[in-house]
Length: 113
Length: 114
Image 1 (tube, helix red, strand yellow):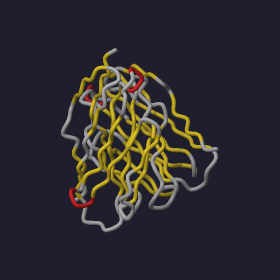
Image 2 (image 1 turned 90 degrees about the horizontal axis):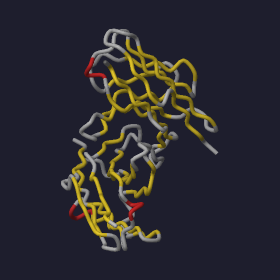
Image 3 (image 1 turned 90 degrees about the vertical axis):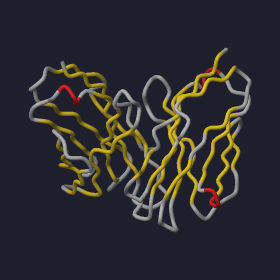
């Protein structure tokens, strides 16, 4: 069966510090991978998605970047965090194809102080 | 443009009451998929159901049922005999013809009062 791992679960970082959140998927090949952010208002904002290694689509201009160095690994990064980067970050995967749902990781709660 | 609207921001019901969560979508695609997700207080989003645009049959799974109506572009979710464990934020989502992008509503926070 497929599983998705996302870490860390919580993170407190000072303003201006770098960020690296990692997500890996097991049990499937060539998944679509996604990073979402959920701010206090509860809505889900798509940040990045990837349909293959090295292929990253950015949905919102921001202080963040994403990379996909391996087929089942998706990394969210920032060189310098801003206060506004605080939120709940969710990694997700879906299988290639129209009828595949998103499957989410447990999320990372990031607080920038 | 693809858009999902969940007009109900927060709903409170007393345990054992039935509750319906509304979802209205917009899309120009003729082939699309609709989803419902549950986000309990723990934070993880749990997939509940997927429905394609060619299948308008209603679906029932235990206390959960879904009513898909293309004529009104709605995909509503009903919980029968609600329980405290149903308290969560529920998201409706739409996936278009590419299958790579998902559009989420803003969610409905359901509180079931014991």
